[in-house]
Image (cartoon, one colour):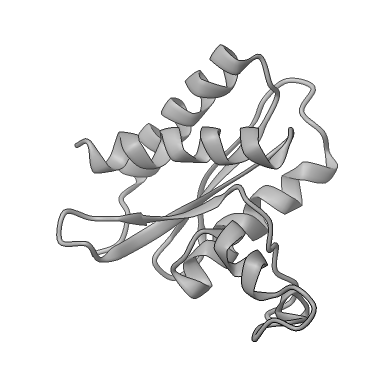
Length: 135
């Protein structure tokens, strides 16, 4: 079973709360198991350029079922996945995208966050994931 709209909205809300706590303006996207956009929010004054990045982070995390930062480590020059970011219509290989698992440890979707440093993006995405896995 893929992520439900209710779950996707819960992830968005938790990530949004975390972004507010941190004082950052984010674009937050959740995709389902098929990498289709399910929920999205752009906070007031969040960078327009980060809108597409947040969606691509979520899709990348789902396409490879791993955090986007982990994929980035493998895609450095000399790495086994060097240049992978040019596949699939463009991937994002820096932190801020995380797969979302169900209680059976199956991937049901992913979240992507963009709008600040990659460390902040990752922390906000993590808050969204925890909202789902805590249900």
